[in-house]
Image (cartoon, rainbow, N blue to C red):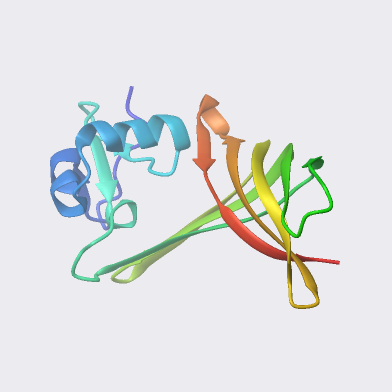
Length: 162
């Protein structure tokens, strides 16, 4: 069943055009739509996916897109060994994400904001850097999205501990 009739003023493109312009396969575009809801095309009367310029990245710079992920993690830390200059640890806990997607094409622009919960876990090392105590870690972060999909990232973080 069609989602909505395409707005006649906003250019719409079939999946083959978006695939050619972005370098992503139609299969990947449909998977991102299903799993992450990052790309949500309208549908033609016949049910064909139709993408706006906001849904794709133009290699000529005609489209400006972005995504920001601002959130926080509440973690438990399990220390592996102590007393050495470098100490390893395992960490994990709940994760919150405030995701903002934005885009501009010609005279049209738009954005959407989503708030979601998830989980993160990983490992890292704590080590001295001069008089500072610092940490370097790698985590797997999985955020549940609307519609049952997930948004997955593997951030590498460096920080100073107080």
